[in-house]
Amino acid sequence: MAGEIRVVIADDHPVFSHGLAQVVQNQADMQVVEVVADGAGALDVIRRSKPDVAVLDVGMPQLDGFDVAQHVLDDQLPTRLMFLTMHAEPAIFERAMAIGVKGYVLKDEAIREIVQAIRTVAMGRLYLSPALSEYAVARAFRDK
Image (cartoon, rainbow, N blue to C red; front, side, top):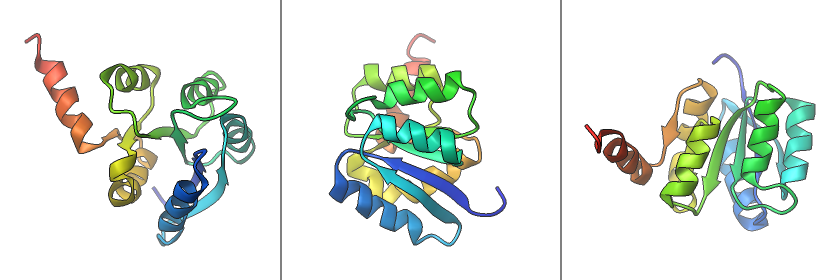
C-alpha cells in the first residue's frame, strides 16, 4: 500500500485508546485520523473520513463493534475493519469472521501486535492474534 495508512481507533477506554494511538502515530507509514470513544462516533468518522483501517473495540456504547462493522459493510465503504478486544471466545471470533472483519487482535497482545496487524489488514489480508490463529486452524481441520 503506497503512502500513509490512515487509521481510526474506536475504544471506550481512553487510557488504552490514546496509548494505542500514540504507538500507531509513531509509525512513519501511519496516521491516526481520530480516536473516538463510542460506536456512533466511529461510524460518523468512518463515513466522513474513509480511513484505510478502523480499529474497533467489540464492546462500546451506542453502537458496538459489530453494529459499526455491519453499517460499514452495508454502506460498502472502503475502510477495512479489525476488532481489538478482550474477548477470545470462539462465538465472538466466529461472528466477526463471518461478517467480514479482516483482523482480530486481543487487547492483552495489542501493543506488540497492533502495528503489524494494521499493516496486514490495510493490504487486504487477514490478521489474527496467535492465540486465535491456533483455534481457527484447529477448527478448520476438526472435521477433516
